[in-house]
Each structure stands twice: as structure tokens, then as C-alpha cells.
Amino acid sequence: MLTSPPVPPTTPSTVWLARGRHTGPTAPDVLRKNLRALKDDATIQDFLEVADDDTAEGELTFEARWLLPGDVTVRARLTLAQWSGSGQEWTLVAESERPWDLRGPSPAAMFWPWDADAPWGHETVSGQRYLDINPLPADDKDLRRTLRGALRDTWTVHVLVHEAMTPDERGRRSLVPLLPPGLHHRVVEHRAAPHQLRTVNWALRDFDVELPRGGAVVLPGAPAPEAYEAEGFSVRNVFLDGTHPTELLDAVTRFAALPKPLPEGGEAALTALRERWQLLTLEEELARERQLVAMYAEALEAMTQSRDLYRDAAEQAHEALAAYREAAGAGERPPSQPKPAGSPFQQLGRTLERLRETAKGLRPVLPAGGAARGRERARDDAGQDGLQPDDRGPGVPGQGVRAQDGADEAPGAAAGR
Image (tube, rainbow, N blue to C red; front, side, top):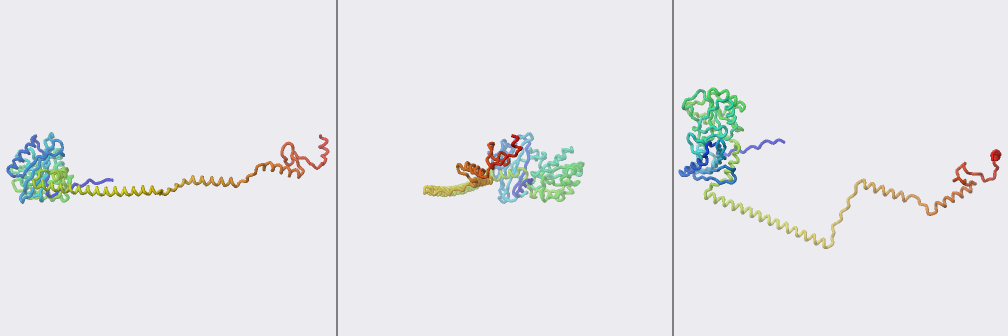
């Protein structure tokens, strides 16, 4: 029986997710230094490098907390994967006490320092940079591979912009910094050269997406949000001359606000933030201890109830056993079980045996010496009729019997002797 794959839960409105790669070898030291500096200037309340036994070998976890305007607490957890040949991947999940306000600072900026050559600001699909323009590869195969990766990525919002003509210095600036700060490290901007429009649309045709000439489109990701329509998230004209692209920024912001399922690995990261959080204030530690005491009290009460039920059951079992022994001592025996009836063939055999015994009982039985007296009676009856048995054997009509009445033999017979 075929079953459909489970649908991942929707990303809560209070959660901010991002993923990237640090290409240098000193990522842990960079995090420690930046977090310490942010704590010293009160940008964040506190941070902690977590000693978590559940993390994989070579992973590091950092926790930080800060306040947004209105005393809204944000808790964030960054996991740094083991070093690989291309660097170290990082996963960041942050949760606010209220629905996320994109006008607030990016959680990534609370962990990583930003500069022009920051090695941590690369997305993980094709290595494109945040807060910078990313020209599509000149090779057609590499171009299609980059777009397929961007279309399937659910961690990052990918925006594709077509340059109708070669831009000047102002047009080569990224449009992402014009977005609200909460989107700065969740959006990647791709640039298609003027001659690449046909190749780009050929690669996008399987996803029902088209890049307008001199315009832009927000790629849907896979799976696409239910409310996504290519027409609603494409812009016909984007002027790369320093003009504020209001229509494009509005499309990106609307797409980021759509309900979307948690990306692959996002559910595990959110569960770790909620269930394995260790950076607690004194009030939170006190509340946690109270919860533990209440939980232990409930467990003790359940154990006590189980003990009482077990004791009652044991007493009832002892009473039943005593009653059984008393009944056995008074001589009462349990009723005998009826023997099971035999098979139909066994019953037929027994019936035939009874019939045979009955037939034997109906056969006449002669007394002792009765057979001899019967033979003598037969001879007496024969003598009365004038016949005697021949010496050769028992009398047979016409053989071995002579007449006893004294009649003469025939003359022919006498002369013959």
C-alpha cells in the first residue's frame, strides 16, 4: 500500500532560520571573539558555548539572547558543523516571544562580524554570497546547475535579476541591503547578463517560472508555498541606475512572509532550541526547578497509586487461594469432565461389533451328543423305508441300494453271473 510522505510542519511566525558556510579555518574563534564584544557593549544580554553531549563529534554549539524594542526576548542557537574541505557549515535558529519583526536586527549579525570579505557569509547550495551580487556562471551547464540548486533550496530566498544592459558602478551594487535587516542573511541575489536571458528561461521552464527582460523574479523553492504565483512575484522593470526598486523589494518581503514548511533539518534545529536550551537567567532556572519538583511529585503520586493497586490485587489473590484450599480440605471435588466422544468411524465400528455379537446369540446350539443321535435317527428312518446303506458309503438314490422284498432278478442278469 502506497503512503504519501509526511508533510513537514509550517515554520512558526516567531521563528527565524538561516544556514550558511564559513570558508575559513577559524570559525570558532571568530564566534567567541564577536560574541564577547557584543556582550561587553550590551548588544546582547549573554552568550554561552554549550557543552552538549548529544551533538555529533566535531560540532560546536553557541547560544545567545538579546532584547528587541518592547522588551521582547530573542533566544538564538547556532550550530557549527565539523570542518570539511570547503569550510564549516553553520545552522542558526532564533525564536522571539512575539511574531518576528523583520525590521529588527538579523540574528546572524548577532553571532558573526560583517565586513566586505567576511568568510562566513556564503549560502550552502552553490556558495553564493549574502549582501552581494552573484553573476550567473558563463558556462551553460554551470548556469543550469546553479539555477536548479536555487530552485530547490528552502533555506534561502533566491532572487533573479536580469541586466537589460551592462550596468555602471551604481547598477553593480546589491539590492539586498535595501531590504529590512531581518532579511539580509536570508536572501541571495543572482544576476543574469544581457545575453543569458534565453538560457535562463530555458532552465526555468520546468518550474513554470519566467524571467522578464530587464526585470526580476523571486524563485519559488521546492516545494513552492501554496500561495505562490509566478506572476505575483515577478517584476517587469528593475532600473539598475540607483533608483529605489520599490516593487521588487515589496515582492521579496511578501514572499518571505508566506507560510512555508520547515526546511530539511529545520525541525531538528528548532526542537534543540526549545528542549536543550541552557542559557538561563536566575528566574528561568528557578522556574525550571519548580517544574522539575512538580514533575517528580506527579511521578511519585503515580508510583504510590500503582503500589496501592498492586497491594489490593495481591490481597485478593491470597483470599482466593485460601478459599480454594478450604474447599479442597472439605472433600469437595471438582465435577468430572465428560469424556470426549470418539470419531464417527469409531462409533460405526462399535455398532458393527454389537450387531455381530447379537447374530451369534441368535444361532441354535446343539447339546453334547446331539449330532450322533441325529445320525442314528436318520438310519432308523431309512430302515423303515426298506433301504439299507451300501457298504461303500451313504445311500444315494439309484446307487448301492438293493431291494429287500425277495423278488427274482431278471433272467438275463442271472445268466450273466
